[in-house]
Each structure stands twice: as C-alpha cells, then as structure tokens.
Length: 241
Image 1 (cartoon, rainbow, N blue to C red):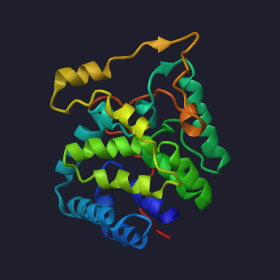
Image 2: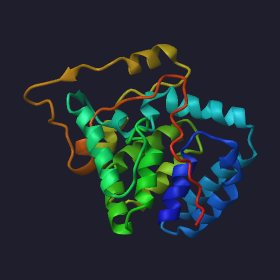
Image 3: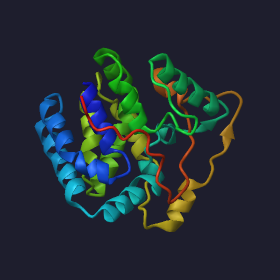
Image 4: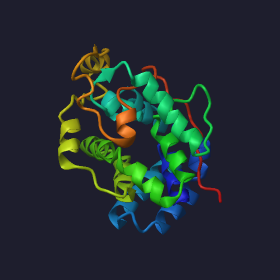
C-alpha cells in the first residue's frame, strides 16, 4: 500500500520534468494495485501517458487552472469542509501533530491539509490505519472526482482510486452536500472571485454543528494557496523502493 500512496501523491503534485520521467515507474505500481478497479487503472494510465508526453508548460497551466484557481477543486482538504470557525488554526496544529506522532516531520511552510502530503503520510502508516484515515475524507475525494468528470479531466481517476482504497465508502448524503456547493469554471472570473471571498467566521452556539468525527472534525475550514500560484511542491515522491 505504501507504494501506491506515494504514486498517487506524485500524480497530484505540480507537474515537473521529474514527474514525467517517473511516469513509467508509477504506472507499474498502479498496475499491481488490484484493489483499484481495472477501469480506474486504465484511466490513470491515460493520465500518466498525458503527463509523460505532454508539453510541460501546458501541463503546468492546466494544473494551476484546475487546482489553484478553482476553489471547488482545491487540493487542500480544509477548503471542502463547510464553514469557518476560530478553531481552524488549532485544526492545522492537530493534523500536523498527527503526522509527527506517526513519524513524519513537515516543514513550517508546508500546509498539512495538502492532499499529496496527506497521502505521503498514509504511505508511512500500517495498511489498516491508512485505510481508516483515508475513509474519513472519502466524501471529499468522491466530490472532486465528480467535478473533474464534468470537466472531462483525466485527474478524475486519481480520486476514484482514493475512494477505492478507503476502508469504507463515502456516505451519499455527504457527497451530495459537497456537490451542491458552487463549482464555477476557471474561466468564469466573476464567479471565481465570489467563490474566493472570505466567509464569515462563526462563533457561539451551533458554530460547530457540522463537525465530523475523526480527521475531518479536526480540519474544518482552511488556508488556501495564493491565486494563480502553484502550491508548495511537498515531496513529489514517486515510488522508489
């Protein structure tokens, strides 16, 4: 399991020449992971072929338009948990502490809710614990897969793979709730500006009514990357051992 989490982490990082060179190795790891349905593995091979042979600048532009400019496709888990509250800073600290307790030290500039970093952490954990942790944001991954499907993006397959690897499937009502949120296209600048407006911080009774247990309960609303800038490339680790 550790190798496949590293492979999926690498696929969701900002495209680089190193990632292009590792595409064949990543493909081999995915082929061996039979927990992922064959149809999804085929889709990921299409993505890998695109990454390996495409123009790097075009690949990078596509990545930024999808995952940086479009809030509903953010690779930061906190962006997809409803509402902002005063405990979001503590949630970042709690998640960072979870990593450190599990033996993964991260830099001060790294945001712990970045999906590739989360997957890297899972690659260091026993399979049972990794599968359980992956189940907790599975509804987020399912919603991301659907939004990418509507855009005919090959990245859809990566999120289907994450749902397949989770110990428990996401609840339909949780996925539906996320899909009801605004999902503007990256070319709709007015809608994007509206989506990136700061939401009010809620205090008092009922402020935490939508909290979930486990991981998601600790990662409420989040910090986001600066618009039009690629996120920090946190250890784009292709499988090596």
